Length: 128
Image (tube, rainbow, N blue to C red; front, side):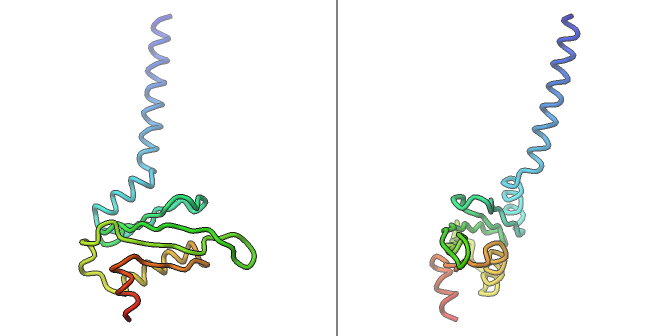
């Protein structure tokens, strides 16, 4: 009887470890951290939850965006987005085209949104 119980516990443990391993591999937050370390692009967002901010990893810099809900012609949608860089020192080498690319990517998910940038990005975007 004890041998059957031990076998059952070992099988349950293996199933649990397999489940945790799969969850770790498909976790979007882990993918964001990995893209940030590699300096590649990754857009992390919960589109269905307006209260959660989104994150973008691009060229080794992490950006955060805050969404604001409002009314459009037919529905309630995200109408305003405020974006900033987590570390402004890592913005060296960024061009206006890089920020236009980020705006285009954000607008793919939120087409009715007006995007505002925090300084110093706002100064670059408004000067040209």
